[in-house]
Amino acid sequence: MSEQVEQWVAILSLAFPVAAFLWEFAIVGRKRLGYRVQMDTLAADAADKPYADVLGDMRHDGHQLKDPSFVLLRIENAGSAKIVSEDYLADPADPYGIKVTFRNRRVAAVVLTDPSNNALRDFFFEEVTEGDNVRVVAKPGFRRNNNARDRTGTIRLPKVTLPRGAEYKVLVVLERWPEDDSRDPFPDPDVQGTDGHDRWYDPLVRFLRLKATRTESHVFASRPAWWAMWILIAAVVVQACFTLFLREDRRPPLDCVGGTLYLHGSTAFAPAVEAAARDYLKRCDGADVRIPLADDTFRGSTDGVTDVDKAGRDAGIQVGEGLGDHIAFTDGLAADGHPNLIPKPIAFSVFTLVVNKDANVENLSLAQVRDIFAGRVQNWSEVGGNKVPVHLVNREPGSGTRKTLGAKVLAGKEPPQFTETDCAALSEKQYGRCEVSSTDAMLDRTASTPGAIGYSEAAGVEAHQAADKLVKLKIDGKESTAEGVEDTNYPYWQTEFAYTYGPVPAAFLNFLTQQSGRDILREHGHGLCSEARNSDECRPV
Image (cartoon, rainbow, N blue to C red; front, side, top):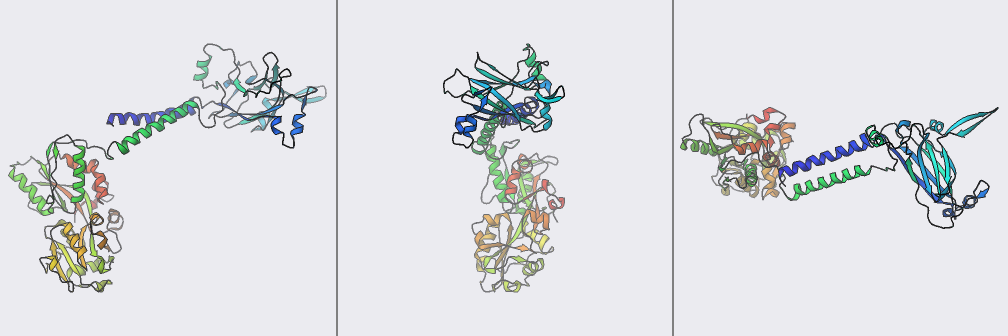
């Protein structure tokens, strides 16, 4: 789906419910006189009821009613505003407000019942003094009459002032016309406002003045409102189908700069950057963008900045200019000696200590961690674990993960020198130390060596093929998550920087920090510098 089509679908999805709301509650729904036929039954239908004989023997004007029937009609204010006499569709001089016609039936009697407010009775009845007697009679607006020529019975109801939600009921007793010997079912009652003078401009005036132009039964919403709601549902379904099945979840980048972009640096940050690069390439399909991704693309933070610095010098980039096709990512700030490289904070990465499950340790104090890396603890039983020798698996000195461990966890001290250059040479029965060159190698060796302890970018542990043999250690009970950094001051984290040779408008960095790349960083467990609650979390120590 094109972006323009999506925009129109979104506009219509918003416009139709707003229009339906305004129509329903501000125009026709503001003044709505509703009715409901709550009962329309023949006396014969109650043949098995105990009062059936009473109904069947009902009399009126000295004769037994023929095929008597009963209609209970409810009149209600179904709108959002008070209905007054001027709102009825009638001549102002006419006392009637509502006319109900019963075809093929005569009206024998009509009774007002169940008004929501006793004050409503005053619209139907008045007291008349005759000599010394006072009797209650129906007002002129409350009448019944029968038309033999048309075979119709009619009741007229007065212009009752109805507050919002007010209602009343009328019970109508009817019979079949004497000369009608059929047994056909009776048509439904016809409820309408009186006709008034029928001036040519009356409909327009009533509409603009929000008059109740006709009476209807509205259980929930009017027909126009229903149509608007169905159109809204259809629009949402269409947009959802395109979103779920015909396009990617994330928005495309704002720009795609053609050419080849070379990435370097941190192996810990590499999984997130590689995933973002693949997504970026997919969205820039057709824009002649290339980002080579090989097994040796990321070789560590130190090697990364060295590679970018060398590329800029080899290209002869002058001061004030920039090299836009190389970016290095580092765990923390790079070492001095690269004056032409410019850092930009991207995210803060969370690291974790990982231990082989054979050690039977899940939580260590900061002091215990320092003792282990200083060589003062050489068996896991000394910190409450199994009787298994400690095997320290370190990264090489150029690793940003290793530098962060020393700066953030080991009080500025470097891990000790290796005892074996090859981790495979470590003895299973005694303490030892070795070094590896990458995060994957670190996790592989820690998982395969009983009693081994190493360190890695936290989110990469669960995704590793040997994750079931590793335990992510808590430090003083604090978990290695972005929330743990912000909420509990979990110590092992570092700012991830992107280094470029000189100032460059790098489209890929915009994608990472301002567009869909942010979602990918979050998915890999990184906290975004632009969203950090504490600005210190994007400043290296």
